[in-house]
Image 1 (cartoon, rainbow, N blue to C red):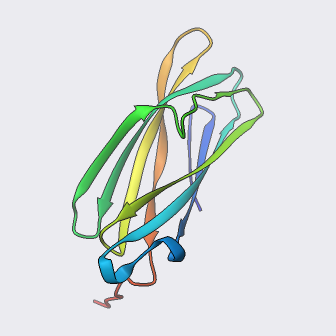
Image 2 (image 1 turned 90 degrees about the vertical axis):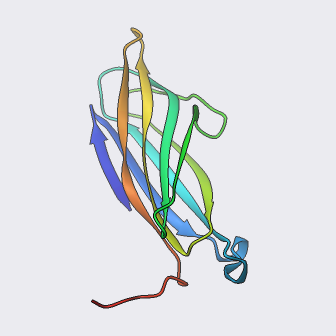
Image 3 (image 1 turned 90 degrees about the horizontal axis):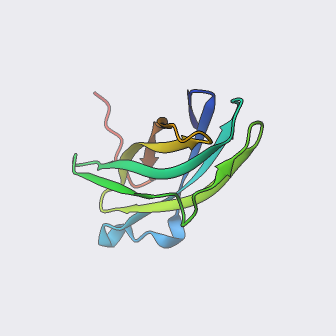
Length: 130
């Protein structure tokens, strides 16, 4: 698991390689990632948008931006959490993701919450010892 805190908002990520959806012979590797967002702050926040930077094992970068997550823009009240699962495919057997969520407070202030960098690892990644 990977975790980070920005302004009393904790983001925890748990990636999982999806064997049944992957086809290594076709250079198709798929991961799910489960996200939990905990609000330890004093006021509710609404998740307005997301940003992801996905880098594959060859260093190719893909950026994804959009409103909310999984079609929702949840309001997360103090002392509560929001969880969702999404996924990403790659053409290489490993990669890394990092990103941020834009949050909005009840008074209209927006701020970015860091999503920690997390590894996308599959059993098909060759191990090299230096």
